[in-house]
Length: 274
Image 1 (tube, one colour):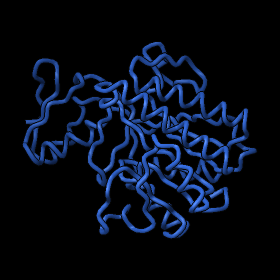
Image 2 (cartoon, rainbow, N blue to C red):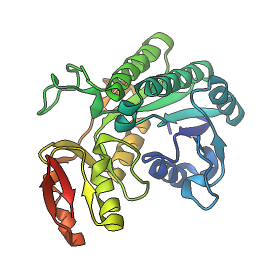
Image 3 (cartoon, rainbow, N blue to C red):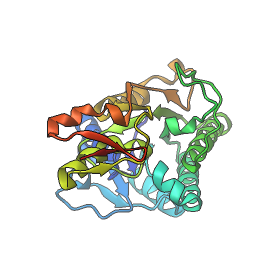
Image 4 (cartoon, helix red, strand yellow):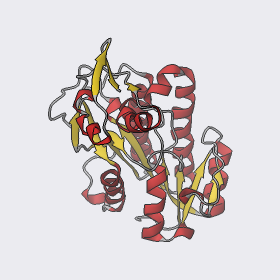
């Protein structure tokens, strides 16, 4: 932890937060990590261990109040609508995703907090080079989720340059985790495919069988986040956001599902486990 004070994690019950909060508590002590979300978390849940705050990031006074009361020095802002959900509700996605990051950055400006913001491969678009994607490249996404990620990257850069806020971020690929259920991201099929196959013995993927997307195992993503936040600022060439990657595959290559005694078939251009 590069800043004094406690750590606030927004969206703590989501896919990343469900594993980041326990990791931070093991590293720095449970009493220093403030988990927050819109959800009411049962006491037995890992992210529900005190301290926990009910926080709506769209309400600026709620962010300011919890930062002030807990003397927060670092904010991991994870609360957002993911890609598939954002495309269904683009107006809501803009309000939640952009309003949330703005309110967090304003709180960080006023109280001198360090901020981590997870960007995404969704910030790229069809015109972005697909292989060995450069750190600084064309970003013309065609989804509302991607638009909010690019806009948030730029806003974080602005607050770093204009107000000196220590903002840092990663462009994360699809994350594979067994802890939290899928949250509505385009790459979440890689996790949902198993939940649905076990429960219903079939799964219809909304992606074509040869759609190749970058993926990463969640513990690797958590390690990347923690290491970035602990890096001395003088060693950082960029602020928002570093490209990270691990592997890539297509729905048709999820043949490892055979281990669950299922097989893959293609129906009307979609991949189905049956």
